[in-house]
Length: 408
Image (cartoon, rainbow, N blue to C red; front, side):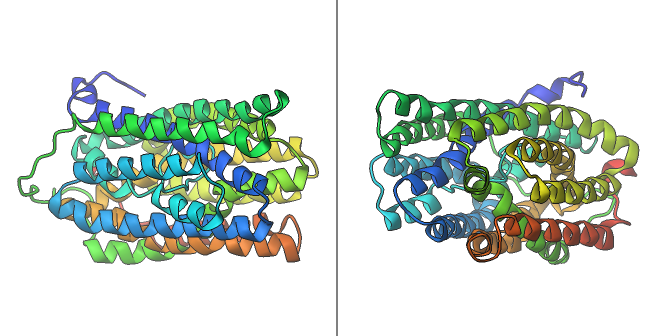
């Protein structure tokens, strides 16, 4: 990844990168802390699934609102509002274990994410952040900027995973299980405050967007959204399992502690950094869509390995490899979609294109919890494996002939 061009590190990009780091740190903390905290408070597997589904529902509604408002009234105010909601929601987690209060606050605080290796690239901030990044970088640099955004996010996420050893340490010093998690939520609230402060220097132009470039393929806003509805709708079933629910799945299936899971996420995040470093070069050599399709099919095989893993060690290995392969495609997919979007509709594409993923992601933890309780412990991961295979096939069907501007 080259940093030779001076426009790389001026303007909005440094502030957006720093904001992603603080946000990813918070997400990495919450993706482990929330399900274990709710379980420690005495709630059943199904109740944990319900809470995570309600959290995703709240996140979905806020994401749609951001997508509708951002293109017209500005992206910066939306990023600031989401940071304020994060402060409020995570602070409440630190002081109560009431189920319905936690469910509502989880939605407000957008407790969600793609788990380890996602680079913090999921949540209501997504439509506003993606459009700002695309507008702040050239077509030729866009893949590299998005890869760097994910790289910064995954390294910050590794730090967030690392601090999840704190509850086990506190429990060893005779702190109650529930009380041992509560300081973690104050840390997450402080991270959201940092995001708010880092958003303040961002400068956003309110002039009409320039005419679309004539290079590459530009797909009309609603036509592109229609294609993304099918591909992302299926992917939402995967995100709902591989996100916060996976923490609970690992704890129940293998009987491991928060420290063991935090170690897994820490290692996965650190190794995924190499994937993000390599992503622009791989996409340059293979082109964007082939890179996405190949890596998506690769994750199918590795996720099947997770379902078959007899011990936590083998689940650790297959999960880490799956995250590394999948992470090559994350910034390339994000950059590709922004590259083929009409400039004036980028926030709408980011929000509405991911709407089906948000919807299926809402029900996925609930379905997974019932499958885990009624069918088998491996059933949720098998469901995610099948959904990944369908998602890869849909990408090949809809986008194999589409080229972004930089490939012309």
